[in-house]
Length: 354
Image (cartoon, rainbow, N blue to C red):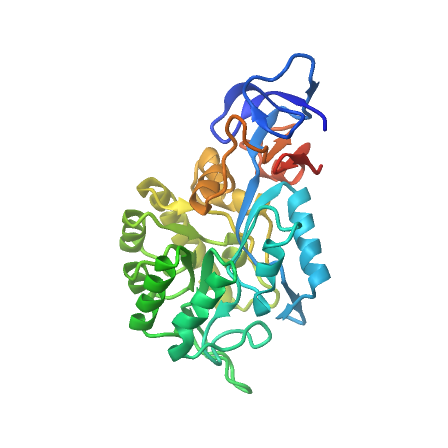
C-alpha cells in the first residue's frame, strides 16, 4: 500500500496541515520524508449522508424497493463520491442491516425496517407494525444490529382509492415514549420522520434526531438543543421543485423554504447538530449548497456534511494512528460546494478507493 503526504488545508475550519497516510492506511501528523504527495489542496473527513435509503428507488412517481444488486451499487457510488459515513434511515425488510454487517458495509449504519402502522406509510416499503407490537419490533431491529431505529411518527392516511390526507400522528405519544425508553435502554437511538407540530411532543419524549422537521419552531429547536439532539432537514427533498407542482404547492414550498431560512442558523447557533441527508432526492453537494443558501456559514455547512455529523453519529474524525477516512479536493468547497462532487482522492477506512 502506498504512503501519502498531505500538505493541505484541513476543512471545514481551514487550518494548514502537514500530515499523511501511512502505508498501513493510518492518518499521521508525522509523515515520512519522500512519500508521494496526495492529490488535491484541501482535505476533509469523509462526507456524511445522515438520511438516505440505499434500497429505495422511484418508479412512476412512487417509491419502490430495489433489489440487492442495486442497493450495493448505491453504496459503492456513495463511497466513490467521497461519502464514507452513511446512516440508512429505513429499508424494506431490514435489508440494509444485512449489508451493514457484511464486508461491503464499511461506513454504513442502518436503522432496519420502517416502523409505521397500517395505511400510514408507503405499502411497497414496509410491513405494518400495530401499536401493541411497536416496542417489540424496535427491539428486534436492535438485536439484528440496528444502532438507530426509524419511526414514522406522522404521515398521511393512505387509503386505497382516496387522496392522501394531511399528515397526522401515527402512534400515541405514550407508545412512542415507551419505544424511546426501550431503545435507549438497549443502547440504540431513535430517528423520527416528522413534518407536523407533533414534533414538539416527540422531542419532549426524548427522540434523538428529527428527520425533515418542516414544522419545527424556535421553541422546538431550543428544546432539541438542550437535549443534545440533531436535525436532518433533507433540503433537496423539502425545498426542491417537484414535477407537476401546483400553484398551491409552490406557495407552500416557498413558505417552507423561508421558514427554514429563518430556523437553520438559529438551530446551529443554539447547538443543534445539523446533518446533511439526501433522502432519495438529492446529493450531498446540493445539500451543502442549500444549507449555505439558507443561512449557514460555509464552514458550518461543511461541518454538517463532515465533522459535526460524524461525531454525532459515532463515526471517527481521523486522529493520529486511526484508519484514514478522508476526501481531498483541488479547489475549496467553502467557495463553491459543487466542488464536493469532484473529489481528487477518497480513502475509506484506510484504503484508497478513488
